Length: 211
Length: 211
DNA sequence: TAGATTGTTAATCGATTAACAATC
DNA sequence: TAGATTGTTAATCGATTAACAATC
Image (cartoon, rainbow over all chains, first blue to last red; front, side, top):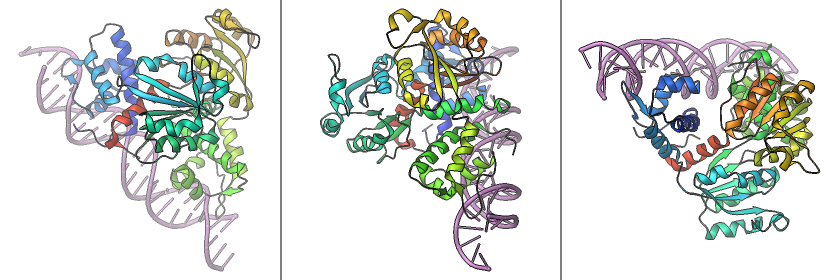
């Protein structure tokens, strides 16, 4: 029951389960079996049961899973619904989009401050963009959980170092580099370039479909 | 030598190889061994050689790989450097960021048109945003390779259907749904919500590191 | 030639799927 | 109770790693 050695493959599927369960719940459906989940997610029923059983026995023989209950368990496992304090570094196109993207705020993610190298020119009436030089000091006096890196790649590792030094627990990285971090800081990267290249690979290799 | 049954795991690593090789090349380095690549990528030398050998024999015993040559081969395999015609649907925060993001244009990706439900209010002097109602007709008279979906989730599947019908070869999806597509259209999704949830999972499970 | 490093086969490891007893 | 569906073990499948002969 105590979770240990849970593979990355399993963990990456948890948010997907969560998402599908939320949409099932919105439809007012009360219970769901692994077989039904299998049909809508495209994963096997066996895998779904295996995955969930890494974390506990959430179902009931002959019945399936209570949707609301399972959402609750997954929320706890993933850590959705907690309050997270964010800082955003890099207020260019992507940084801007992430800052505006309200879905995350509704979930409890809150921006404490925004930093950029060109702070002056980016600030306006609605937002005070700070100079990235101030980041280190800011982290000394403010508890921050997650740093979002949306800088050019040249700056990314330096920013990551400051964030780690400043005690963040996680880094959400949008720059196209693999960051090195210290003392248990968690990295999650969104590599848009790699995603696009994967798409073009398949577009150029029609005979190679695995699906 | 003929590529077949190449697993998704292998394919997902190709853009990473490409990225690292580009940065090696920028440093003026001429040759690289799988052992050296192993050290900078964190993958095993054995895996790197395995992966590359799915596509051909690009190395030389006792020497390693010629950096420029290998970049050339990977470009061909991935399909980087070709011209791709894009349409963007959804000109909100994320759509806006993607449209502005110049890196892709430099690589040969070119926006043919941008669509949104609120086309009128989004157009300005620099960009003519079209009403999404016109998408279907546009695709009839313009060859488009890739459709980028950056709409709210409620609209995503409908847009995907129109894109498939209109003959695009690939869809780059940023909405938080898994799209169903027909006749060999390739889907690549960037699920920001899942990425963020994966991050928070690990932040809440410090004892569970696999790395 | 000697040293280095590939390409490739074999061994290991891990993840997925199948099967079924337990039980609601 | 009978039917359904879980939790869990065992079997299969696939991916990664190790090893080494081939060869530059």
